Image (cartoon, rainbow, N blue to C red; front, side, top):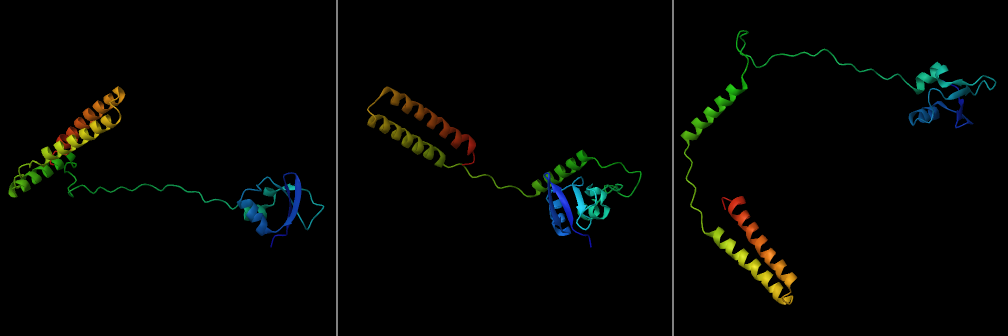
Length: 174
C-alpha cells in the first residue's frame, strides 16, 4: 500500500493525503502529473513531481487504451455468382420496377372518381359572405372612419383571395 503524501496545491502544502483522496483529486483534475509531492514517511525528502513517483503516477493516471481501426473487409453481395456478369445497374432496376408497377395497375382497374359536389362553392360563399359581413359590421360600429374603411376593404380582399386559394387550389379533392 502507498504511504500518504503531502501535496503543494496553489502554493500551499496540504496533506497528508491517502491514495483514495489523491485518486479523487486526480479525477477532478485538481492535481496533475507535474504537481509536487513528498512522501509523508520521509519529511526530509525532496519535493518531486508526481510523475517521478512511478507507482503513484501509474495508480492516479493509468495509461489510456489506444484505439485503432482494423483492416476493412468487403464482400460483394450484388452478383449472380458469375464473375463475368455485368455489374448491377440502378437504372435497369428502376425500369424493371416501373414495368412491374404498370403491369399491376393494368390488372386492377381503379374506380372512377366520384363527381365533385357543390360543397366547395357553398362553403366558399358562406365563409366569404360571413367574413365580409363581420368586417362591414366592424366598420359600421367603428364610426365609418376612413382608416377603418381601408382596413375593412383590405381584410375583405385578403380573406376572399386566400379563401379562394385554399379551397380551389390547396384542397383540390375537396
